[in-house]
Image (cartoon, rainbow, N blue to C red; front, side, top):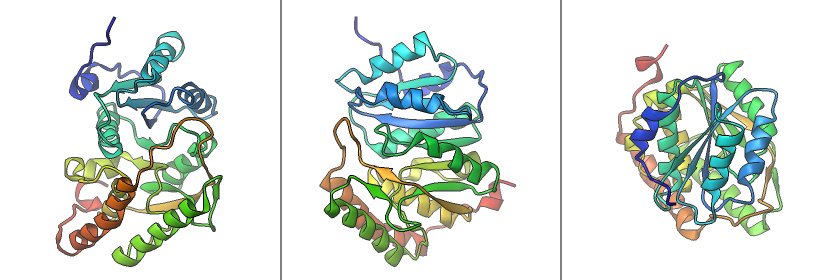
Length: 269
C-alpha cells in the first residue's frame, strides 16, 4: 500500500497540539535509516524533555517508515513527521519545520543533524543559553574554542574553517562558526524574520539565517561543541552547496548595506 502524501499546510493543521515540552528539535533526513531510530532515542533519553520533528525528503531507503513505526508504537505524543516529495533542499526543510514549530506554539526551536555529528547531549546546553541566559540564538560552535572537529579529512576541516573566516571578513559578522547547523532559536526570532524571503538552500542558508538574526538585532551566543563526522550513512555535502555559500556571502554583504531588516524590538518585547 502506498503512503498518501499531504501538503505541509495540511500537516501543520492536523497535528495534535497537546504537548509537554517547550522545545522542538527539527531533524531533516534523506536516506538516514542507519541513524534515524538511534538519534530519536538518544534525544528522548535526555533528562530535559524535547520533542522531535523529522522532515523527510522522500528517502528511498525507508527512513520515514522507521519514524512512523516509532510514532505509532512508542512516541505518538512527542515525535512528528512531515514527508516531502524528493530532495527539496536543507533550507526549505528547515523553513517548513520553523513554520510548523511556530504554529504548534513551541518557544525554543532547534536545528540538528540526524547523523550524530551533533551530540544530543549538547541540546540542553543550547537550551540553557536561550532559556536561562536570555540569548535569542544559541549556536553549537566548532570554532569558538579552537577547532573541535573529529574524523573529518584535513582538507574538509580547512575548507569549513576558512569559509567561516571568509564570511567574517566579507560581512563583518562576528560569529566564528558561520556555517554551523546545530542551533537553538527563541520563537521571537523566527516570528520576526521573513522566512519566505530566505533565499539559500545549502550552507548559505545557515549563514543567511545567522546574518539575518544579527541584522535584526537579536542576541547571539556561540556554545562550544565537538563536531564528530558521521559513522554511518552517506554525507550530503557537495561542491555545489559549498559554492553557494562562498558566492552567497557577497549577496548578503550587499543586503547588509541596502536591505531594511525588521528589528527585534519592533515586534517583540
